Image 1 (cartoon, rainbow, N blue to C red):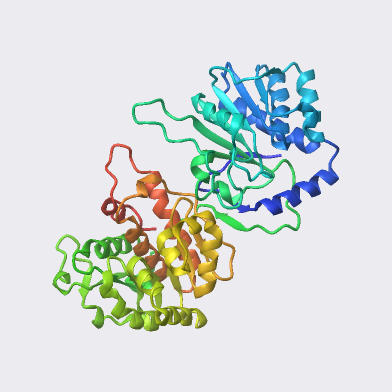
Image 2 (tube, rainbow, N blue to C red):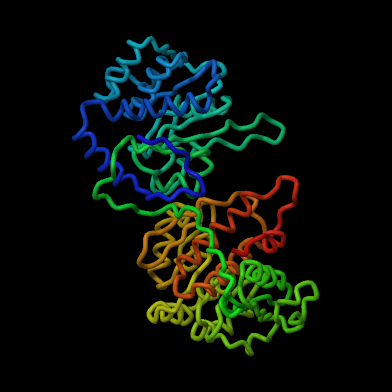
Length: 494
């Protein structure tokens, strides 16, 4: 058994709920009776003791299923380690599943205290209410207990935060704790111990907020023949640059965008491409009046879009493009060597079947293409709504990738990189600092720079750009103002 913290350097396969249940069933058939639950309880107790070694009061809220059994087993193990946990149990102990009933008896024998109501305060609350097999929203006493947990200094969820969908990361209505008011007490610090497998829902949509600090224990069980549904990429830094290289080694990037009143978006993308290491960066401003030398960045070469030789260039199109970009898209889609489509370019394609056909034709001829939509842009391309996209981000990203034969970088919490023929990758970096205007333009420029360096590997270029984009935000100094412009000028060069 190996307990480990999951962070931005972790390389790991991700398994959905159905695959995890099959892995669990296979392990249960091979192991002695009750062994798997004992291992789960031991892993939980070890982590709880490490996270809150001086806790005077530990409250374990146990549900009526096997997730509750894991909590009961953890209570026994904590009792043996000198802690005095208090357990509240929903439902009738006589109706517990067999493994959970055995853990209940072991907890009684170990002298664990049981109570009808949660303690008034505690340093650590352990959420063992709903696990992998539940899809219902918490209600009644369960919902009350989840709300009360927020008064603890820390909440540790066993396997999944109660109410979180393991596959999609969507939190059931009423299960997600509300943000604390600015003048009120801080929300509890959150941690989650994923058991047997890492689930994709812990890493995207509501999952990252709900889980908090993520830990994993495989309980000594191998996945066998089960196939993962997604991957964690590990530290996806772009490689270093050899001394024996020159600007031609890193390609020409062209940024096409910046319609009237939106010049800044194109400049952000161009600045990011430059700082991410592109050999040369051209700016094809759609606003002709703005197509002039930038005295602060003389390295950027301004051209009218019609004068750019896109056949040799790695293009990012759409950043601040407005309606003006629509007229250029047939040429861009037909001739760009490699292409990043962002923002207004995506919106134009979503509303024009002829542009969609040209995009699909790029996929047929295997011309490297990366789409970088946020959920609303993805919804327009899929002819649905943003809520539906967010309800299953992995499905939305892979559907888009297959429809257009392109790599898709679906932005948001747990950005997803999907391609038509590869497992999707969930990016583990980034935080709410990125929720500000212009950071998407920066990402588009970074992807274009990555394509210039590796034009035949669009998925790798997208994964590396997303990882580095979020990594810079994660390491941002607390005393330094964050903005898209500052991000674009950061240390991005590999």
